[in-house]
Length: 331
Image (cartoon, rainbow, N blue to C red; front, side, top):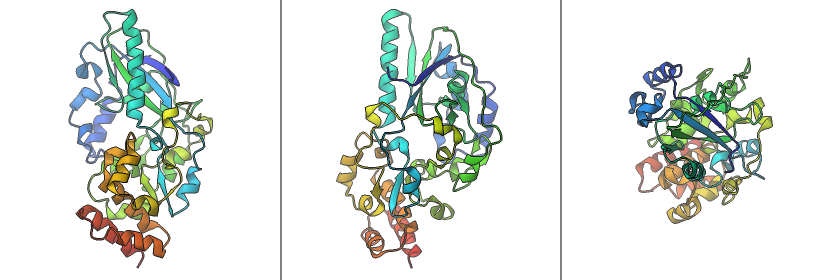
């Protein structure tokens, strides 16, 4: 099927439930209301899908081949940094298709097979499930880490009614390392194994639909879609593998593109270039909002200032406000 690994676990997430509920009570989910509205369904799989007794957890490597070095892009203020997971095709579609093929194969052999496929698309506590299924451990940055493969991979789940044998839970190997905590530009990792999404650049550039708080704009730098810093410094990622999935190959040169050039895209160009990409779902205005912040942080030049001025009278109040802020940084 092309998966990097698969594990099986039961549905008991009672040890993870209190921590998740505390995270919600602290408001660390920000505007992601979907994280809270389903109550305990996220930590009780059988409440979400009746008859579920096991969960198949799968991981799929996504680090693309021949991508420009991430730090080289981040340190070049004229470039636009895009999280490595979003350089190719939308992972939701790729992972879902693979999981469905696996279910189809099982259905050919077992007539009483009931299942539901998930890929970051429903109230599923995927990291906790993957950890119990033996695919890795939850790192201090809250992403799943695998001792032999790092963290550059997607996760997907299948809730099933078959009492299959379960795998052994993975052990934690973060030790005393705090590299991910120390490197976070906005100090979003508020404690080991705890992230305040409201401070996270991935949340600010992807999930947040309103204005980016002023305090975080200078800290975002040129990260226009997501942030990989915590993964880039993780020692375990020296073992990460390049994906063999062609759908995750780089599209439209997004690993090496200037802020000015992508700020100039028309809405039609954005739609054409981002079709089939995870980036498409944030929409054109939010894309420009993010790039405006990047241009505000870029080295001052006539080219940068002129690019910003082309959007000063845009129909979107949200974009105009961010453009005005960006121009102010160059005065």
